[in-house]
Length: 202
Image (tube, rainbow, N blue to C red; front, side):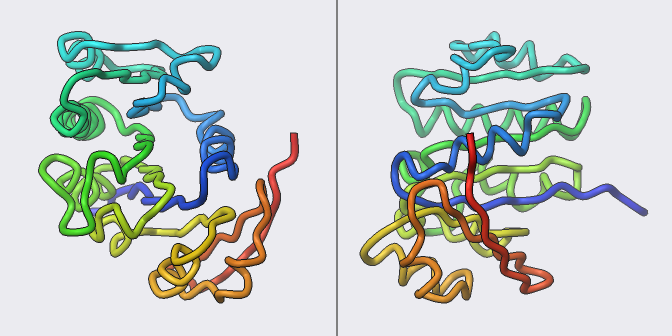
């Protein structure tokens, strides 16, 4: 059976280095995009709908068509993230494929195997046509399943041990990672082994 697979983009970098801005450009022309939005930043963008309850999120998961849904949850963030991942998987598998943005993953995952519905999403979602943008300031504190399943690695400026950690995981040279300035990035394609560089311009 031929399928149109999604992609898993693992995005790393220090705060305000350009991760979210880069991701926003990637999804700008996409029809259906959902964001796990713990800092309420995607919800503030034009065209996005802020959703704050599980009931609302579940209703949107059942709908087709164009959507830009930012889930801004309170309470137990790990439990809310797990619910969001389950809704993404349902919407992307049974309704229409979509793009999913998961921010601040170190807050809701651990360096071990990806938990619960997040693990299901990144292991099974790609072959359902779901493209995932997995974002963390420090991947040494986030889950190893995403790192291992990545289609590509997008690295922004970082420092200290993060440079060496991402070098080991991505094979991007330490010199390239250590030299990055804010808004500069290096992309490594895991399948082709191609490494490219760029800079965000506003």
